[in-house]
Image (cartoon, rainbow, N blue to C red):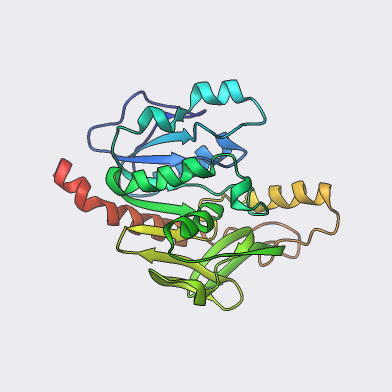
Amino acid sequence: MAHVSIISGLTRTAQRPAAAALKILILNLMPNRAVTERQFAELFARLEVPVALTFCLPDSHRLHNNEADIRAAYTSFSDIAAQSFDGLIITGAPLDRLAFHQIDFWPELHKILAWRHTHVAGSLFICWAAYAAGAIDGAFTGRQLTRKVSGVYTTSGLTMPQSRFFTIPQNAVRRGQIIAGDDQLGATLIEDASSNSWYLAGHLEYQTGTLRAEYYRDYHKDQTTPLPAHYFDEDYQPHNTWQADATYVYSAWLDSLQPTWRRAHG
């Protein structure tokens, strides 16, 4: 298992990255930030490459709970804008029922996506971030949905949890290669080699019980919320059928960053 150090975040383990580690910047927009940090740490620990994770927040994003504590633990984008990283990940966010112009950090997100072209070797955009980045990059135009896509689905051989109110129609992809997708779910993984950007519609980082927790959260608000599809067994126990694909996709993404990494450390 690879060594993972967390440079900033609620679960910080180190003050500086090890010399041989790939430096990954994660713009963490998920509401349960410590949970998301642990998900990524456990996922990267299964891979062969040592990584250093820096968890970051947009300066202009207003946090509704525990803002002082989170800001103290996290790096703001302005703090690292002069640095370079091997990879950038932008997480999902519960924002896909809003218009883009309603999002407080939308102008700053434009700046971050422009910044990445000169400061990171490659980028991975997850769920809402894929939807938003595709629009900003001009790679595709997603479409909002009124009914949530929730469950574990397999498209083009890739099994992945989905939890979103948008779709990326395959015929709306103008740039990049559709690696996985179908007519029902839309494109679920797009790779744009011109900018080394990967757009992932689902959540391979999710742990076994994550969709269950989301379902109960939503059910308490709306008791007509349907069960996540292809997830629970007959005893309503969740099953993780995507871990192997998560390891495969993230290993491939790290491999796409490593020509730069090898020049620096080889």
